[in-house]
Amino acid sequence: MNATINLEKKHFPVLLNELISIISPLYGGTFIDCTFGQGGYSQKILENKKNSIIALDRDQGVLKNASIFETKYKNRFKFYNLKFSQLDQVKIKNNKLKGIIFDLGYSLNQIKDNQKGLSFSHTGKLNMKMGINEISANDIISEMNENNLSKVFKVFGDERYSKQIAREIIKQRKQKNIKTEDLVKIIDSVKKFQKTKIHNSTKVFQALRILVNNEISELINSLIFAFKLIPVGGIIVVVTFHSLEDRIAKFFFKHYSEQKNSSRYLPETGASERCFRLINKKPILPTFAEIKQNPPSRSAKLRYGIKNKNNCDFNDFKEKFKNLIDIESLR
Image: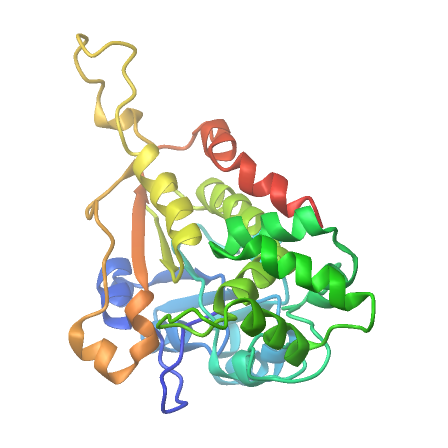
């Protein structure tokens, strides 16, 4: 996953200037780009020869681009074809890790790739696998029962007509294998009288993509690994593009930066008790100029926290989103 794209079909790393000002790469250090993609963030950081990048991406489609970076930047760039929940497998040669970056959008190349089937404008077999996957969207549509399909569409896509769409899928899959264009027609038939600003299929396709790629547990686990990996004073940055991702990032930073006194009558404990220090409590949003240049960036939100201590209990974090993780387990 990586930065979103604009309508002119040119790649733009979203909130790039804001990101650079936050992580301060001018002074040198090592940064982990957990969603390498087209390498927009990595390239900007590597402009300073004092910096090095460790990059991850589960998508094998970025291997060619990663190879170019490895040749150009030699010992300052290292790529791992891993999911970002596998951060614990990353090896850091020095103790100069300054920041860990997550950009949870999709690049133009990924959207255009008909084999991935991320877009409802494509035709053919449903897929949506981003790499290192166990199942595809075809598996889900072909095998999942009606109740679970409805639940996935409702919770992961906020789809109002989840039950009706699930029911129609079950009905039609008895006759044939449902392809991308068939699923779009099913959704259109259910929502034919609805007038919305977004495409009828947007929510269902989002829900399937989240489920196929385990995006909820991937993000939760990777943020916990990131905290353990980065030293005190290091920065974790997350750029989100839909409400579920942002809820997770918001809770992660906000909940673990607040005081947790047993009584409101007791004095506040010292700042050192907090896991994070937040400079910006609200998300950083794209400027009007950026949205004009790259319209899909309008949904982006950047949140970040500075690690304040080494040990933190993340049981609350996992419990908060247990219902979402449980739905992922329906696969």
